[in-house]
Image (tube, rainbow, N blue to C red; front, side):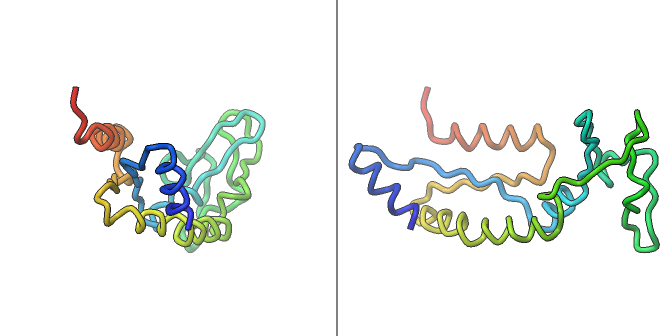
Length: 140
């Protein structure tokens, strides 16, 4: 158990985990965000089928983007999806999260030090909540 091993190591140093911050996003939102990303490899410009689609994007009968229509607005060159931005790769990543990270959260939850921040909101709101969580209980 990673968390228990960390606790033991910290105890030997006279320290302890004092706060665990979880950035919580539903799996369905992660899938939408990650699987919708496309990039122009040469320039690094990034697009998203929902939030920042290329002007050229065409959707099929199911509403999915047609791969061949995904081209860079500036150059007309093809866009690509990174290998780790596919549904299959995301499923593996989420399995790893649920089997390796969630048990760490579960370990620290009874200690009252896990703070969950809803990260499926605007970036400024996430940052505000993260700062509040990290400052919670601290004195000046």
